[in-house]
Length: 159
Image (tube, rainbow, N blue to C red; front, side, top):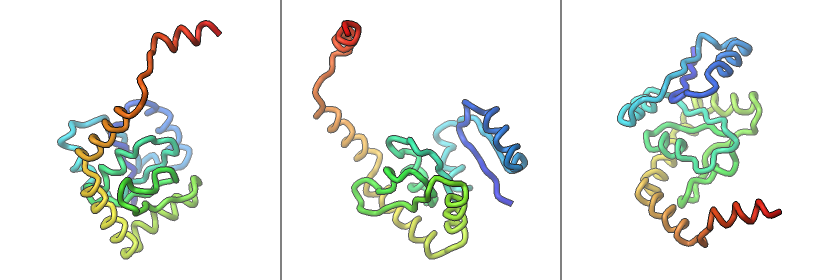
């Protein structure tokens, strides 16, 4: 009875459909094109869990956005498990279908765990607001030494 909704799916749509066919879940898959920003929250509110299988996300912005809407997050990226500035962690599974499926199932059926994950996620979203995130990012970039792109290209070409 579960549905997998991929919001903002632009690339690799055919590959995703082939994979869904291979695993027998074609009827549960809904690939949705990007929607205006003001409509994204409605999709988060309609969901029961954010199943985030990326192992290479760099900033976790989707995770924080989902948590701000009170959506529990199931993930495999251990580097994003700790919520910035809060000391709390998100539930993480080993990057295997069985382990990830088990975590998603727990977040859907274990009400105490689900409640704690939602509570901690909302608190983190409040503590680490978009404004604070932007301020910290600007501060980080300002602390880095300047890089001359033209000089780097010339140096690389001389080797």
